[in-house]
Length: 563
Image 1 (cartoon, rainbow, N blue to C red):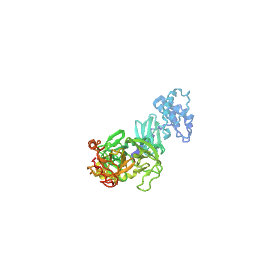
Image 2 (image 1 turned 180 degrees about the horizontal axis):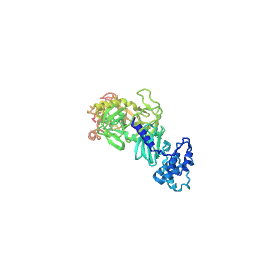
Image 3 (image 1 turned 120 degrees about the vertical axis):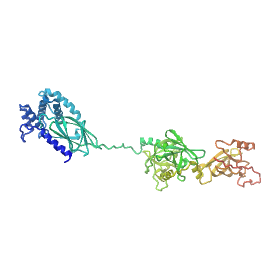
């Protein structure tokens, strides 16, 4: 026999032993009304008390009516003279069982203060009563018994426990002897709302309580329309976005990047580092950092790059998310090379081919064309790469895997090394001419050079661009009056060359020193009677030494200038 069952058996036997053997003879056929009437006509107070305790048993057949109320008040009247505290417990129990009990105030005038105190105690404690069921195993104890039993019966959930405040904690099936009084019971179980009820323990009576707790409500997130950016998304974007600023003339443009991993991998475009030997990173709060940035992976053809920054710089990382056709998205642009305004836009149809960019319904502004597309929760959908297209962020997985591998192998690139590998290092050449109002058009000729390197400007001009060959056209009055070719090599000076031309003019290329215009060289040219240092004499297309008419020409030079 287990200990719990043994406690119940011994408790029941002990409680039964408390019951008096001198109770008046009661027949099984007697009703509550007959028992109470018999008690009221009994002259012996002790015998009347036993009869009343039997008659007010709420488990007997019959209503708890005014006669039952009369029996309760008569019992309390007798007990009050012997034990006022016990009388208070009986009154509280009666009010709890039958809150609407009607009392003859004239017949029990002296009990009314105690009765009113009982109501004041009980009525505020009935809020949780709907979650508890109460039953009684009734007994009539000997006159000196002041203890009863409290038992916890089958409840929901099965693992429920009840704290008898200030006394003990019991589980379903447990029972405990308690002094006659009112007790606060706190029922609880994981995943359920707690219940708090008060019950009275009566002498010789087992009060049986069961609970049916309410499950904790499942938190239902507020339904936010898919056209609304979630409030928490803006804070997440502020912590996970950064401006990537390449340093140097003629290098790439500043672009938006995002922290892709908590260990410091930043995804952006290759254009953000193209030709640069150093970069600045603008995190939230204008936190500017630069030194310590390396290149973990890049893809020139898809205009992508992954930078490695120290993890201490990272505040938060952003997840990449799948895009859906026609979904609402938000484009984050750039303002002064920092994350700027956020605007809503709809995606178009999703690309079917693996290397196809996704599109948006409408066009991006110039600032947005260097930004990112995000969803309403702040997940990254795409890196913007054009007037209305973007590279899907989920396709970054391969480049990020390559970046992680290089980080693990300590084989990262410096920014200069990337520029050298891709022949994107920058050179400088100053072009001049003695033609008044002449201009020059410089056009890239190498496959690795980017179209934006092309430039047309009034002479003298400083041309800045990636290394390699460029075609040069001398323009006068909007007409081409001469052609030549220059070569930009960052690490060496160029060789002298010249072309003849039909117009008595002179075009020259001279080195542009880092940090300013080469005034000493220009001064030498001026002292020689020319408008500037000589780069190139353009005289039609007849060859390097003549103009087609046998007239002499003026020579020119091209100088390749290291960065």
